[in-house]
Length: 259
Image 1: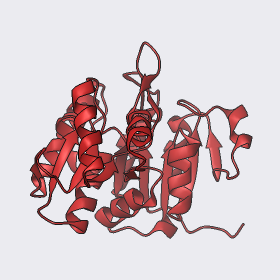
Image 2 (image 1 turned 30 degrees about the vertical axis):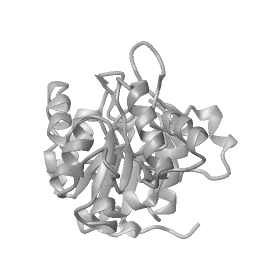
Image 3 (image 1 turned 30 degrees about the horizontal axis):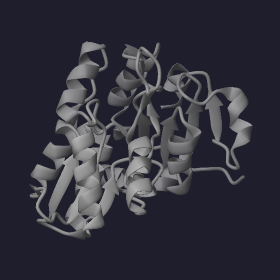
């Protein structure tokens, strides 16, 4: 493999890398502090579309991780950016939380259940039968189907929770329509993140805990990829995939000296 250029920009997943089940991963505070000291641009990325980035910055700060608001990029923001590029000033029926609805409002979208341009599915802890039925009928009537991310499950202190990908599958079975997923592993989310930083993939790195989203997205975007073993993917599972991360480390603490 040809030698890569030095890393000048860092992108990192949040859940499973910086925090795990609501608790900071040991060394995450030192990693963020080193990034800020270095002056190198960085983004914390998450497929979670529930929270606004201001909410996420506050939640991380309470855990001792001081991440600037502008250094957070979510699948909700990426979805809003995508829709604004595709159909500026459009309308959408949204199943999701404040992170998604706020992002869409901020790009000028009107939220409506009357012949919307799009049905947009995001993360929520209160999926309702009525809302899903409405989404199915709107898609059958011609609305385009968008989902923030393909994750089938999400973490909680009690165990796995059904996530956007699982609910999208339900809607697909009912409509025969596959959604367009904007979040990881879609390299679109990574490229918009790189554009925000003014960074180039050849000198950027992606850190994640999932082979099927984080590592794949970084690989397809042309970045250097690091897999940490503090989240979803375990070491014995890596060989099940037809692709590999460039580097595997136990945790984010092992990357502090790489900055």
